[in-house]
Image (tube, rainbow, N blue to C red; front, side, top):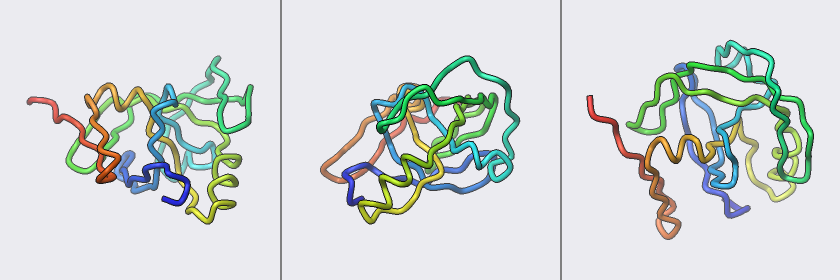
Length: 129
């Protein structure tokens, strides 16, 4: 990706999307405008989002979603929803594609992630059944 972010494809509740990997983001996030697209059930959230030059943004919370990245699958994944327009504006200004959301540290920690920046590969440890 032109911006040096790692871009990846993931599936939420069976729906494919494009995401950036952000080790500095506490939570995995989806754009507020994509509630219906990803079949999300939401609830009010006390959390305010901040990032990419924006602060104090209102958020919603969506619990118990199914997140799949490659062969790795996480059930009961919580997602924070907020307005990602500032993120997508920054991406398009650098001739990069818009994204549906952000894969953050919560998912990376849960998957015991290893990021190989040299090969642009994300490794996630599968859970034993």
